[in-house]
Length: 105
Image (cartoon, rainbow, N blue to C red; front, top):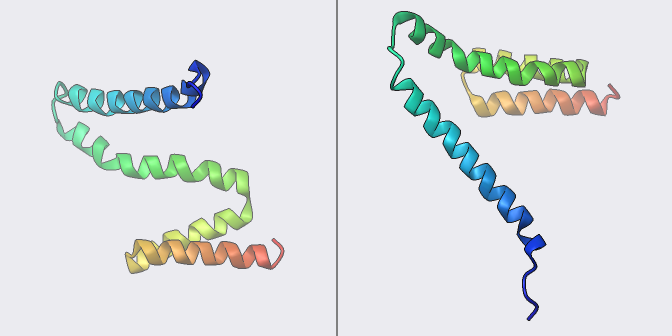
């Protein structure tokens, strides 16, 4: 059996470092919020946060992927608004993207 070289620990060290960083960010956020008074303004900001995160995630995809991605995301959003079903919205968006790609767009 060959001994493990120090260079073999690189990926493990990176994974552990990212796990520690992720935990520190989450724990730090909870700790920080214990020191923030929950005023009406802060509550409104926290209520709007999920939509902001979705917009920050989706807009670069639309800009980078073009018309097909935009139509697929709009379809998924419309299905979500009408049917209130996450799974159905994902399937609809993926179907539109696959159909448009198959059509040559």
